[in-house]
Length: 160
Ligand code: COA
Image (tube, rainbow, N blue to C red; front, top):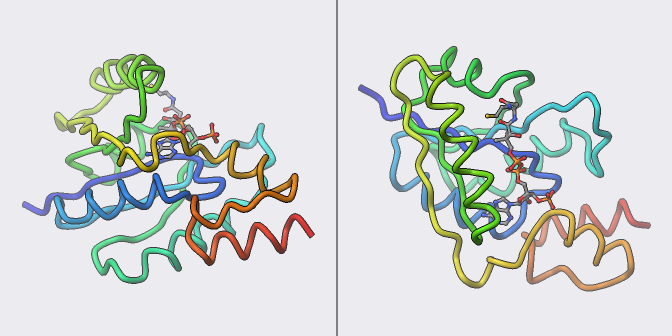
């Protein structure tokens, strides 16, 4: 049986913290789908199309990774696509508290006994968040050590 994993999130934009989780999860599973959640209530910094395209480009070196999008309930998307694992990154205890609750709710909703799998974030990335990256960049700060060079260039373009 193919071991298909999912890594879902806003990815607005994808950061080095996310990329670290993607690379490690890709090594653990036969395939990894990185899916952008579509939230009609939120206008992102990057559009969903842009986010998906950026993920495709920064994961080009990982042949078993592909990018997608979904809307609605995560568990529906998981059940419809037969993912065996949903990977989440943990940066700190605040992440843990949220993730613990979501994992338990999702466990009730998954039909095939899909597991939520937690990977501890790389210590070098534990302070990174997409919002902080956007805030620092929009105020003229250097984010080149926090995101892939392609993402840094796209942020620069947008900020201009
Ligand atoms: N490194 C760096 N940053 C990380 C990270 C890591 N390893 N892991 C998470 N982050 C950051 C993100 O950049 C984001 O930062 P921001 O708030 O500054 O933008 C933040 O942590 C939140 O992460 P993200 O994964 O994007 O969103 P989320 O925690 O809200 O979860 C889903 C996303 C898709 C799992 C969740 O919203 C969901 O399930 N949505 C569908 C609706 C649903 O099913 N709801 C019921 C859930 S039980």
